[in-house]
Image 1 (cartoon, chains in turn orange, purple):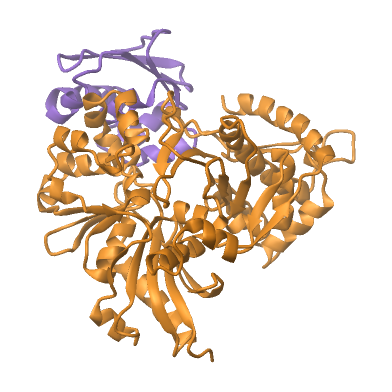
Image 2 (image 1 turned 60 degrees about the vertical axis):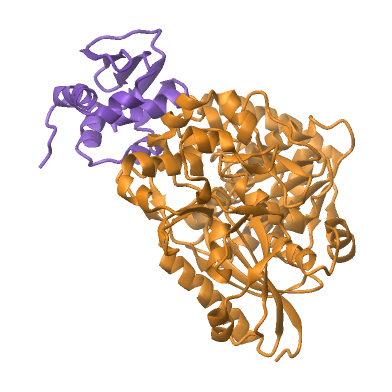
Length: 501
Length: 116
């Protein structure tokens, strides 16, 4: 049993799971526990979704109990959390959750007209850097005002999911720029709640918690919790915020021009910038990084990890318990283009504000009636899924890298970065070297980095990256990259036809 | 038991929702584009003309190529299923039973209350 080690307790609530981990001061993950994050339909149509907040909190507590039971007699020097962006929680005056909704809750579709009637698309985008209105906390809050007036009347606090964890652990109300930026209520340039938006919709200004920088100590673990977990009396809570921003920290994307690819359930791709820059077409989002004075431009490739997981579950799970290593083998023994087998599962260039139909998924391949032996096998289909994911990332990476006139580094982390073969494929499709974080669960690392800043172990993120993070550079093969240029064009040409189905 | 047993009763319901629900009219207070709904199984088309919060007209067996919003249903039964709450709108979209051929997201959000 480990003794007398100083560890950071980190919690990451992603789109699909609740993860609790212990991280060392040197940013090594000692242990983590993963539980499923359940999401419930709140209407027949499937627009409205919600969490069961009691169940969610119980899983957080269970996860903490589990990891601490494996590392007794350790000293927890701090606690930090990061969560899926866009998720919101509304509390009543006693601090009970009236509503907790995930990033896929689009109940705001019924109330977004209020936003759209009050602000032109460009005016709202110039304040918030985000579109379309149906996705965000602003439209959800208006939904309650319009459709559930009795609930709205009880709302006393409007929080992001990460802010809610701050409250549950410390009893204090705080937010931070990385989370608040994803509510469509934050003035991105000023870094404060938008008085224009709050006044327009007559919201109570006290709904919104004080905003502090990520890496700030915002309280200490409540006494009943430190007793429950048998921890030292003083465990400082350091605020982190959005899991994507934490992932970017943990992969090392902190300098102007850096591009970070977060390979999770979805694949947001961010470029770090020194000032807020807004897309004139109101498509690519502008958010706040965890680092003061750094903003992010986001282009999003869509359901990348979700597509990968679906393929494993639908096609491989019946004959293997290790689908990831099987896919690794498939990638090794197949060649780019996968016998002209092309997959269309969703990953593509971000065009979120104009997405008005859900596109059909498709495999395009050479059928067995052809007079040839070169019909695709499961390994070719597997490769084509991974190529679809890489092409989707490429299209978004291209948008961001074309905006930079100096050389830049592309960092990669997240679950799919655990596949060496996929990282090679991605580098070849991008036509560029990528820098893959040694620890792929970077959100934990980012939250722990914020803790080290909050506890003043380090004064800046750059020192942490250079001293504690390790990377593997995956170089592209120029010959393979050239092949992929042609394959991508074929894939893209077919895509325009598939999209019309 | 189904509330809506015929295609025509669904069209009538679209009018009723507009006429009888203040919230629906409020949502459409700034909307005046023609909406075309087509049904691929019967080649039937319906035009819906919303004049902001001043009135609505639903014309069966009518079409307008220049409609600002065009929605395709794979069959007339899908409309019945939606109105009878036997099929959710998101499921209908994701399975390709409903397709938006033309129209921006801002307008479509406003129209949801008429049809779903």
